[in-house]
Image 1 (cartoon, rainbow, N blue to C red):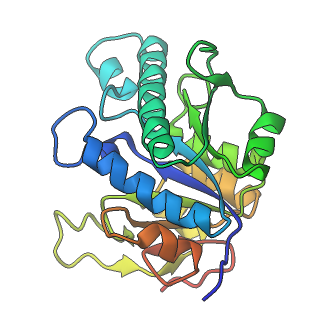
Image 2: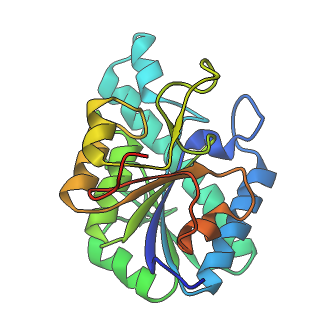
Length: 242
């Protein structure tokens, strides 16, 4: 089976880098993710990544604890840069050229986000990691993933999570929860299925970018997704609800 997607946006949650730890970054997990990315880069896939920061600091929780929401969100953005730099280091340890581009300028450690520069890096075969979210408070890194995917003309958004797709209920709480193989954007939004926030799904819908949700912990799943194998759940305009 050949490549289905040539340019992809991979959305990683901060929690995905945490592994079984209660906080922070598990180097073994980051290294395994880097190896999987190396496999698809070797196939000629152009890879951009948006990484969250929830393993270090989550703005919503900070606000709930009494912090100013905008301030809390900015702290969360800085946390994503820490994750982005960690991922960059793991990729470059295995000889994958990587650039971190941040929405908040941090010129000593990363390049500022410039759309044309990001696209040029991808065209040159470099992995691009977007840090600091969108640079704006009140927007999630899921929304950033959808936004950056549209800006760089990515063909798909891969939402790599700890579950194997989208369910009609929380599978941890409801053993009878049903996993969808495919969904429309409208169904995901109207039924509040928590795949991504509403703004992110709407952005993907407006730009006809499919979303594929799959379990990151299964070795080889990133490559399977790129090859078009049926894993997880796909969300798209013409998808049947099955």
